[in-house]
Length: 295
Image (cartoon, rainbow, N blue to C red; front, side, top):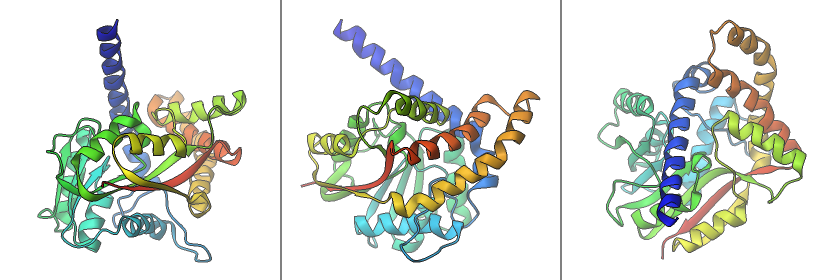
């Protein structure tokens, strides 16, 4: 029974990894044309400071700044970018904080794009990108000063495994920082769970954890001083921007999908942008920035 269960869990984990790969391969043009630009190369949401209006592109870069300040990243530190996407944050950390960065993603096409980006920006000496799974990292114990995960832990089927691996690869005194979607409570009302589920399945996300569940995973992994800041208000303009884009884009996407000019994955991605914002407005989830230290 135990072995069968373990095999089943591993199979489910591999299926989740493959779904993530399909999602990012299937939506790369959506991100390229509708969200990021050549300066930020960001596939995350943007942070707007209270009382200060930033451009969309500027808010995406600002998210990097906010997380880097919380983690107190400084020159010469070794940072693991867990779920690095196409390398936008990795390159920013090398350029703006003088960090040495190792980015990992299970998506081979993202590895290739991130390496090209690092070369084009002249930081290949400081940015290395590998195809790897952040729940089973190919790194020795105590090999990083900081683990950085920006909107990537949400893809993990077992988020506790991410925290265990992060604690393992962090040096004593090292820091963990995450920017993450977090469910407001468990359980939600049935209708709210259904709406949240439609969003998660559209974006190939695993079930969201609450802030308290994230804290428990971190503490059980051996990390300390775990704190979460609810920054939903700062991210709201960016979240709403995606929603408004989806309202305009769904009719076109639906037509192209019927003509088989858009895949199931890319069409679902647009629908998911509507579900996420509606779930947000119903109070089903928040955007949190979490941080912890390794004793």
